[in-house]
Image (cartoon, rainbow, N blue to C red):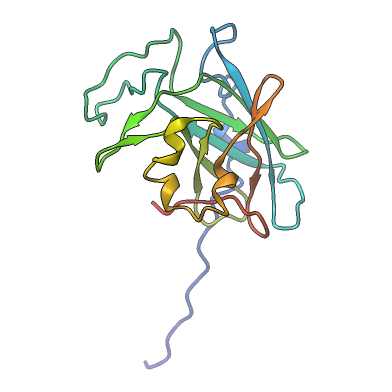
Length: 189
């Protein structure tokens, strides 16, 4: 047999959130009422600017001291410095493509190659039509360590602003554009 068969298309990562990924308190990285807590709100849009109503945003972050309560932290796991902090959030988008996470600002982290990573959240986006989750970071404006962050420095200076949250009345805003002009920078893992 010399005939080769074609390859079937890869499966997409969604739409699963309606099957088992909904998490009632997922938006709360910290409990309501936590001192210095704020909301990160944003909108996910596709390449045409249309809202993505069935996406899922997951976030991971260090506590305000820049520590993780996880054995992979090279300094050793340490309980969080904020009561109720879990370091992980999950929020689905609404019909307008909006999501929201209640959290606190993480502290700077030691970089694997030396130096310091600026305070940031690591964010994954899952959604219908995506073959893999998309991974990006949310940095905060005005952080002195943004200028020396080893990851942010690898991003074209003209595109770094796609990784910066903007101040908002109740915290910050971070919109995610999946493709097209002013596409959010995503990282390969």
